[in-house]
Length: 340
Ligand SMILES: Nc1ncnc2c1ncn2[C@@H]1O[C@H](COP(=O)(O)OP(=O)(O)OP(=O)(O)O)[C@@H](O)[C@H]1O
Ligand code: NI
Image (tube, rainbow, N blue to C red):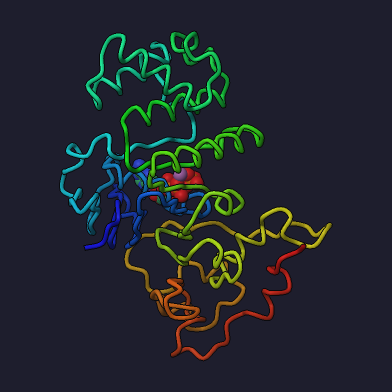
């Protein structure tokens, strides 16, 4: 047995709609250890949030986890065991206003979580709520504990949401675009706060974002998601130094500051397709400038790349030995390389 906090194996979450079956998450596997931040990055519609909700047992109707395993500290959750680990896994969403109840004070919402998850009540709970607000960097916490969400700024609200998550005393924190709705300065502050808390509490973090720049700052390991699948997974340094999948390279090229001065930021043309049915080709092929004949006929499996033990995997036919195309090193190094 491994000592992973969270082990996800071949997760398949589908939505059965009247028209079709959408494979929003189509066979992903990953682990999160205590004290580790695992990033999940990809464009809108790639399946990041459905992955997050699956981990928490919060997939909405008509969605269902059709296959695979999600284990928390070795306990299987798929099949309905989430209740037993409620509070061990907490989630922070993008929009703090949706996570907060406007009619209760911030303090009461923290105290509710403290009552359910830690059995604290009365003045003990109030005291702990104030401490949590202090921990997440809210000034004058003793006064603000009795304010309502609308009296908080956007950044302060997200801090309050993080305080509520911490009131559950979680081991694993799932962050689904926690800073996307915030301006850049506030975003940096919230990222700092999350990394401090993670260090202090030895939290495992699953961090979801569409922003490669944020991934570079937060993640230890990265999974690049496209149309329900992980197309590339590796340690964050490797992924930025030696990205393999054309999609990863495209995402990296669109980070401001990584290209020659004055260059227009390249974008990947087109959008993420909806995955219906069994894949019979590479789902990225229609947008891929390196696609060749077989990409329309073969669904790529995951292969190890780089030296042995690097734990770097990619799902792209360019890296499968049976196809003798050479990987697009030359063409991509020119614009994907570091600029000092
Ligand atoms: N309630 C639903 N009913 C039907 N399909 C859904 C539902 N929720 C999600 N999906 C499908 O799952 C796909 C992935 O959605 P998801 O929200 O996980 O994307 P995402 O990567 O989080 O995107 P974003 O960056 O926009 O948040 C969607 O494109 C859609 O096809
Ligand atoms: Ni999302």
